[in-house]
Image 1 (cartoon, rainbow, N blue to C red):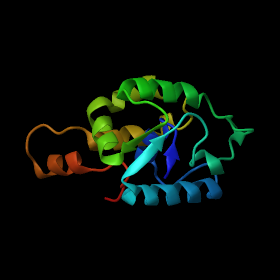
Image 2 (cartoon, rainbow, N blue to C red; image 1 turned 180 degrees about the vertical axis):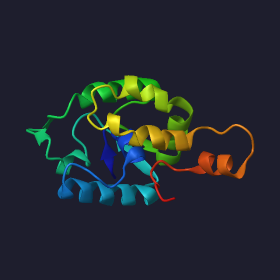
Image 3 (cartoon, rainbow, N blue to C red; image 1 turned 135 degrees about the horizontal axis):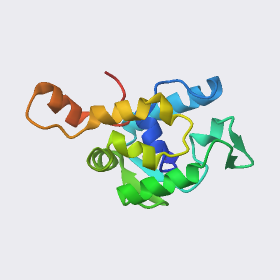
Length: 149
């Protein structure tokens, strides 16, 4: 079972295939592909399967900002807990309902990737639609772990 720290739920959403280096990107791409069919995911505290190939990891600690603070803020926002297994579809729905792009400045404060706008752009694509247009219907069905157009 794939294990991720809470803030990586948003990183998976905004993932564009570009990471710190090739090893990190290859690992992230592999995990993102596996999650498309996994069904469930374990939310953990600290180093996870994505961190495993990160060049910013030093002695199990991240040297890039304060990911633990981001984890805590997202746990609080989504009202989820670590050391639990969640259905990916349920998490997808939860993120759609409880996180908006304008929330990222607070939730992700300190993230070196925030300024790129990738997560905000992806969240805007997930917004619960108003009305009944075909585009709105498509946005409502997007899965955070399937970034295919």
